[in-house]
Image (cartoon, rainbow, N blue to C red; front, side, top):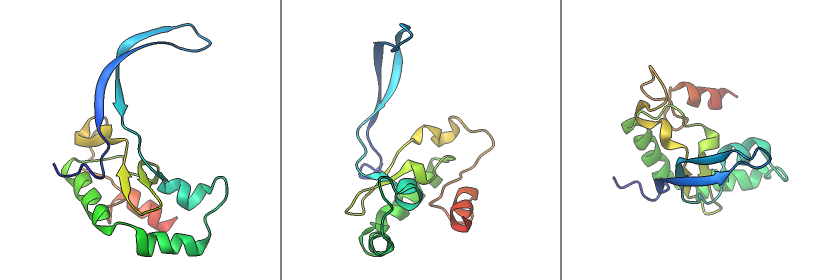
Length: 134
């Protein structure tokens, strides 16, 4: 759908493993996702581990390096797929300002009931207002 640069590849495959310390043998299908480069927006803005990002670096990242086209396309993806779980922990950003949207299984109302969409990327939604006011 043209979102390959912001959505990691996801696939289903067999899991055959033993749960550590329990010895429980797991044999089922699992959902796998390719590695998402960067760190979550939540970590960049609030956690700051191992140390907080200096304000001037944050300003440079969000004002100059952030790929604003990807932000708009991410909002479009969330609207088109009725994403109800897009929060700052589900948006990864790398040093170049490229976005990766993870945790997309809540799209198409797969796990949320009575939700049209709720995304930090879309103004007036609950998740965006919480982020804006906090």
